[in-house]
Amino acid sequence: MRKFLVVLQLIFIAQFSMAQDLTISEQRVRLMPDNSPATAAFMKIKNNTNKDIKITHAISDFSKKTEIHNHLMENGMMKMREIPFLLVPANQEIELKPGGLHIMLIDFKKKLSKTKKISLEIFFNKKGLKVNIPVKKIGHHHHH
Image (cartoon, rainbow, N blue to C red; front, side, top):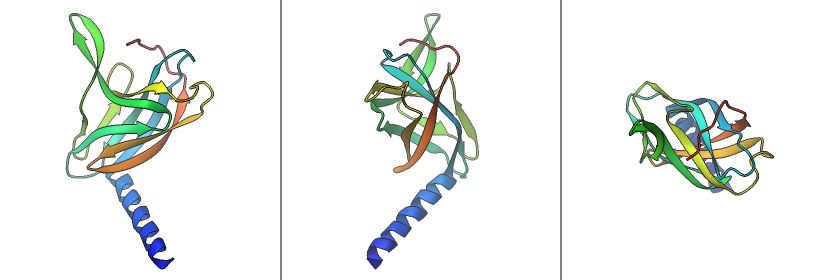
C-alpha cells in the first residue's frame, strides 16, 4: 500500500509540474449540428518555461481522430491543413482560434449537442496534460 501511495504522489507531482509548464485558458469547443462529422477546439496556451515547447498531438475520448490544423491561403482560398506540431515559444502564449490554429475533433463517438464538456489530452515533451473543454456556440463555421 505504501508503494502505491508513493506512486500516486509521484503521478500527482508530475501532473502538477506539467500544469506549471503550460497554462491553458479560454478553452472552448465549437458546437456543431448533429450531422457534422467534425468540430474544432480553441484555446490560449502559455509556455511558462525558458524553452520552446512542441505540442505533438492530442487525444480525446470524444472523437476517434484528433488533428492539429492551421488555415492557409492557397490559390486565393482559405484552406485547413493538418500540421505535424504546434510550437509554443519560451515564455510566450499562442492562441488557437477560428480562422487560425486549432485542434480538430473528427468522427464523434457520441452526439456533440448533448455533451457539455469534452476531455482533451494535449501531448508535449512526452508528457500529457488533460483539460476539460466546454462546448459552446461560436460564430460562423467552415467546412472542410
